[in-house]
Length: 352
Image 1 (cartoon, one colour):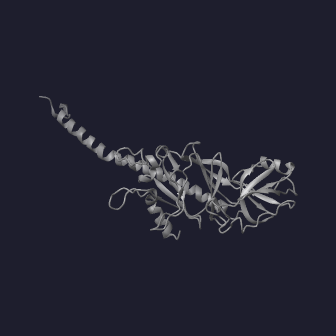
Image 2: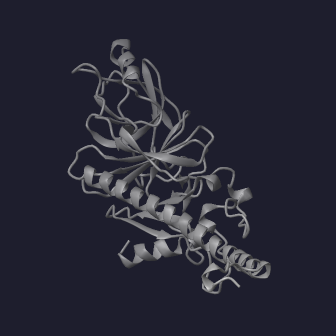
């Protein structure tokens, strides 16, 4: 008989099968939670990075004469997922290439006016980047008008909003009570405020995170019977810039496509949705269906591993909170506004 020290120790086949079964049970019950926690942590870190970047853009605007801020750029002309954020500069107002540069009004229509000048005065303005969507003001006073077309020798402009053109930033102005520039032969000095331009190296989100522009937007929700004005950025490939003034207030949102620039009046907090890039593409309104077994489908706002970032327009303060994917009774939220409940509560708690 062999001494005890020489005996071989091991496990029987039945014992091994029991261990394998236990490991399988643990994997089924624990690993999904681990993966979910990992995804949430990645989104949380991306959210912190964006909040810090927006805070930097806001602090950078303080005390400046020209507005500045940040711009969110999608990955392509048909994309809604934005991986890159840039600081944004508002170019210095363009007043012509000569000291005596001036314009004259050469015609009019019901809602627009056309200003023209000599080719020497305005050919250069084209190379200075004047384009539709820029703003123009005359003689150093009065309202800023929106340029709808810019050519070598003339620009066409209209009121900013109202008269069928959307919400007016200069409330109450109409073509009847607005001081339009006097017609020729009067001449007018001018200043043109061009659209914001990206500045410096971008901040690029990693780990498959993005800003989901399709569901991001601004404005208040519907309250009771009062209709809300929450406006989403649903144009594929459009970049979104937010501009702060010298006091840190959020003054303007600029949505830019290769074809047009829209300067939007700020009607409420700006909301940016941080989530997974795989969900941001193709999961628009018609396909925004939550899937309990495949968390790569559905909309980002339907999952707890996505986060909202909100910018208070009055103070420029930036807040973040996870998406409210389920109600207190465990049922799923049904729309994007409902998913913003936690972040809107934060804004209200801070007086936003």
